[in-house]
Image (cartoon, rainbow, N blue to C red; front, side):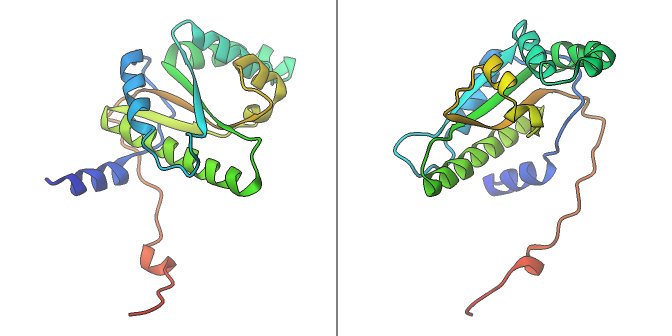
Length: 189
């Protein structure tokens, strides 16, 4: 199989994974994923993104930051389930942050580049048998959460990625895709 077929297969087979089996993912492997993902294209002189990674005991800090955005009655009812999901079942939480104090055009370019980087992370992780869910949850905009995880007022969270190994026997069907030909406006021969 040639390289193009490998890329096509990875793109078509990748799925959003929300249920992890709790097996740890090494920091070295996560760093390798990031080292390769940063080859996403960007328009500025310097990459617009940075990362905040929660693994091991750090996952509790992430869980507590998320819970700080919830009403007390929600935490009383679901807090232990959230701690279990964030601290035991999910091996890593990665916050992908971009510079936000940019002129409008530069902001759009930075956001697009950071989204491309996140797609790189998803594809690279999938090739290693690691599932990813890309969250744009309301807590990503909550000032208490942002302060707790170290995001400055000059930054924007583009996504929180939860990463982990999953049961490969659980097959997730792809969402239907509209054929590109139906979405194409062709001008010229």
